[in-house]
Image (cartoon, rainbow, N blue to C red; front, side):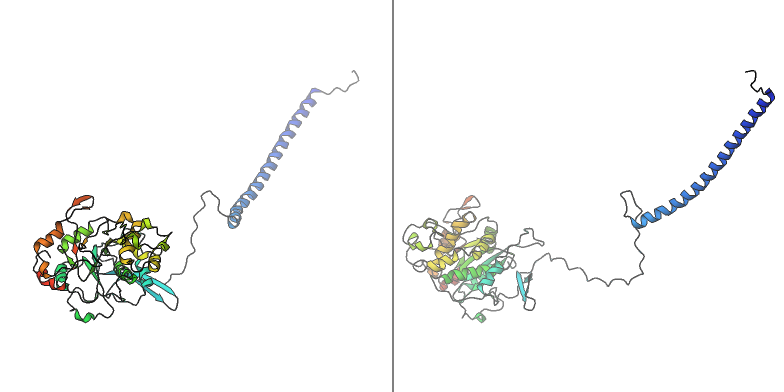
Length: 416
């Protein structure tokens, strides 16, 4: 240890100070270098971040975070659109007297146009099949887009002129818009005998010959129904002959029919020769003898049942093929059809009075000597029936069969 080099204390102090100074210089240089690198790096990052969003937005879709709204490209100003056509006129509050279904066929494009139009004439060139097809159309929307006045369709199945036309003219007077008239005469009938002022003028429909006791009678009835169904305001349909007369004034009959919830059709099960005895076993199994019914052909139907009658394609052909005299289709077809399918729609009684008390193939006929107030009141109030669930003695609204010579005494009555 004695040989070790011994430094004096002043030198040790100088070396220590030099070390500290070098250390400070080193830290200062490190700070300068670090600061310079930080400035350079910060400058590069800033320039990179400004360019990055631009490139990202230009190639990627918008993200769920709220992107800025897209602005539509500006377009050069265009010409104003041409003025639109005026809106269609609102439906009239009062319908025309006859609102019917118009179907036109474009032969070039084979397109069919169906619309509601006013019927100005009842004559047309449609076949029965086309007529029944059009008349069977039922709107699915029950709420009408316009106000409708319910009308009663008076359908006259006649041979020719109406002998009681003056009585009916008096009956209809003052009630326009509440009724429609349809005439089915023999095709040879000359309509020029009717004055243009008559309510029957222009009310003839395309007709075909009718032979008593044959299917042509039902064809005529369905033809009348179908033509009347083309007017959507017709809600009740009464079948009459040229020998029928009204028993009450128009207002009473109109209210009686339009306020009823059922149709008026006599239906009964006649087990004798004139009923079940006319049944043809070849109608089975579509029609069983227990389904067979009889009734008067002079019916009154509401619109729903009228549509079903003219739309039937199941039972009508069977009757045409197998019901021939002594089976009379006009007495059995509609009663049997309604009994099998629509019995809940019928009151099961007729409102057209007729006297069969003498028997035979035809009812009793009444002439001028029979026209007395007591006789007519007996027909009006001499029975009991059910009307809208209540018992009433007002059961018949019309009567037949009357001879033309009964016209003058009937006109002297005051009920019409």
